[in-house]
Figure 1 (cartoon, helix red, strand yellow):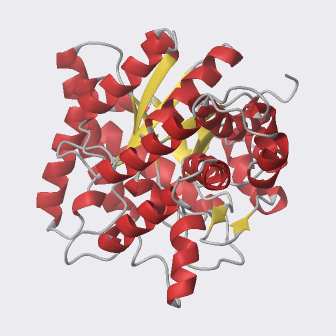
Figure 2: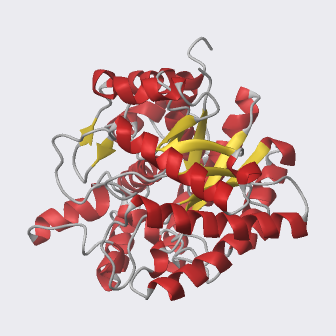
Figure 3: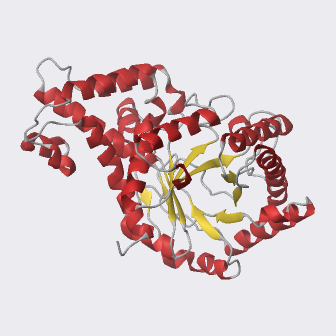
Length: 408
């Protein structure tokens, strides 16, 4: 089975790496924004849907990627950013958000209304979830019809634990029960039909389920295909559908290949991409500290730590333990919550200072082997830090590409 990688990141270097990777592979590229990251109020990136589209299109133009090769998706579109508010208030905002996504040009829409709002259970029953998903689909259909362009395609369902990685050490994870997956499909089909949206349901291309993969702050649960065998077999009953697997970060090439072979054709990755970017940036920070007289020791790390300590909202509830433990997690956790801080002006200034300091310098191979052994090919010649950072991200995308096209 063929598949596609869903790149879930708003970081310009990650987006550029994904687009450049698509050119090299001569294929389409799927770039997705999440509801918390990009919404009508700006999300944590400060980007509204049209801003995100403009960013992707600008980089695509620079990388010479035709616009028809770029697929834009919206992830976890629903009331999640406003779940502390009453349900109707949160759903009205979700209506406005999905309208903004469609009007901006997003056409792959993950309808996720599974979370409870103020006064509701944390996880809603299937019937309520399906009803709210249909409500959002109706908004998307109206907006697509009025704004022109291709009609949307949909992804339904959600995964447990929530997106972004677990907050604790995980040792085992149960795949979604096949009867639960079957019920999700049936309920959504019935509710779409009842709302006069049968043609829209025909454009549901994937169901999000839990295949038994996840990552915590310090460990990864790798795919065990034997445990997901019955779940994979359900697709024989639904030949028009595939599965979308979330939190596939850090799985490795073999597990990714098995996921695709078993019907998990859409593989979502996000934190691993910015984790690889952070690895490369911190490696360059060490190289600059060792190599350039007067460069402040580990300047980038110091700036990022100060930012995270000053504004702990993005990590405080996720990283537990002693101060020393929290320090390690802030910088090196698999959940990579440092990614929320890269667009801060102080972080951007520190990255600029680092890359400018190293640009064009010839770094000895032994120093590269100490701090960035996988990128030692950049040693011994004038350094292009931006190209190195892009390559660090592309190394992750190469594993995903090998899963989709193992013969290449």
